[in-house]
Amino acid sequence: MAGLMSRASMVVKAKFSKLLDRAEDPAETLDYSYQRQLELLQNVKRGIADVVTAKKRLELQETQLQQSVVKLDGQARQALAADREDLARQALERKSGLQQQLQNLDQQSQQLQQQQEKLVTSEKALSAKVEAFRTQKETIKAQYSAAEAQVRIGEAATGIGEQMADTGLAIQRAKDKTEQMQARASAIDELTTSGALEDFTSDQTELDRELGALASKSQVDDELAKMKSELGPGEKQKELQQ
Amino acid sequence: MIVRLMGDGQYEVDDEVAKGLHDLDEQAGEAVEQGDEEKLRDLLRRIADAVRANGARVPDEDLSASDGIVPPDDLSLEEARRLFEDEGLIPDLPVSS
Image (cartoon, rainbow over the protein chains, first blue to last red):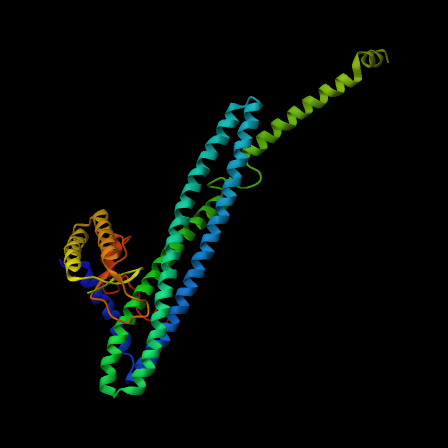
């Protein structure tokens, strides 16, 4: 089996020759090709915007998870202070689960960042080549006979076709990565709404309710004690006499 | 010769470097055949590193075609296989219809 480099070249050339075959005369070929280049340039810009949006969504999820981690930590302390080690354990277990999710999010975020950087590099190269192609296209149209033009077009087109294939792949891969990430996020959303997975970020978890009950019980105890002391022994006597 | 690192850009390398790349490239082809993704990525990374270290960057506005195209170094085995299939990994041009 041969190496990958020459085969990759062949694949790329084959892709681009398909595009060139579409037009009849050289001028048309050039204009057609140029239009496709501009379209691709738009696509790569859109691709960058999509990755940025996906990254923002991840960041939002990350913030929410971090808040939940802080909250669970506080709840664990609260539970322990109330001598409820079982609840504290539960809170810490959830906290550790969320921390793992946070790590995953972080990795995904880094992957998206890499995709974004690749797209930006690609956009810059494509943009420069499209501009060079535009200049060359006008020169070819103005200066060469049809036969000569065909050769010149072939040269210029192969160079830019390669960049187009490269950019096309970068867009495709970024899109795949973004979609994978979104599918995973939606899957988690779906699990939480269907109740299969408890929504740790919701305002009221079972843990919240138990801790709430605990807090209100101790508040009631406190108030009772306070009232008793206010009434004092003398008052109590009076009450008894009545 | 001119080598394109996909997702990066084009570099001009001399014959000596090109020879070294050819050897690594053959091994990368074998890695795909053996289904060894780790080896494939390692080789693609080594090829890319060698090109960056020893090559001269071709300006973005240059319209020269490359003599060899190196797939991205985070390529999966599945992507490597698709790269050479009919439908292929690289989308048809133009990307939008």
